[in-house]
Image (cartoon, rainbow, N blue to C red; front, side, top):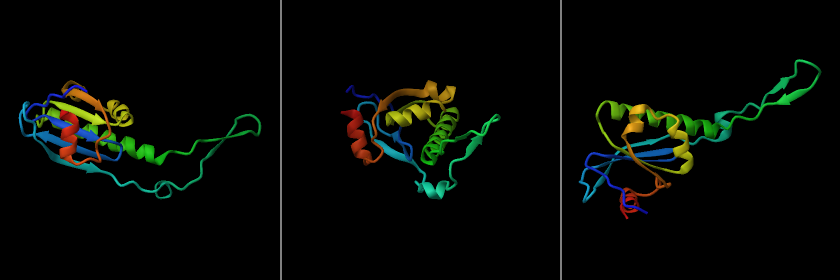
Length: 148
C-alpha cells in the first residue's frame, strides 16, 4: 500500500453505514497527528422497531392475479440516510472553508453509497479514497494503517 500524504488541516473521514469519524491532521505532511474533530452515529434499531407492516400486494388491472411487493430494507434505508447527511456535512465544511482537502476511508459498500451524494465541491476536495473499514479502530491505529 502506498503511504497517503496528509497535509496540515486536511480532514480524514473514516466511516461505514452507521458511524463516521472526522479526523483532522494538526501535524504536518512529514509527521501527521490525527485528532478527532467530530463523531457521528445513528442508532441501529431492530427491524420491528423501524417498520412492522407486512409487505403489500398489487392487484392486476385485468384478471384476479396479485403480485407482492418486496419488503423495505429499513437498515439499508437508515444507512443511506446517514451517509447522505454525512455528505451534506462535508459539503458544508468544504464550501465554508473549514477544510480544503478530504481523504475518504470507508468500506466499499459505504463509499459506493456516499459517492452518489457528493456535491461538486466535495468531489473537488477529495484528495484520495481508501477502501477499508477502519471505523471501529482507535484513532492511533487508524493513523498507523493510513501511514504504514
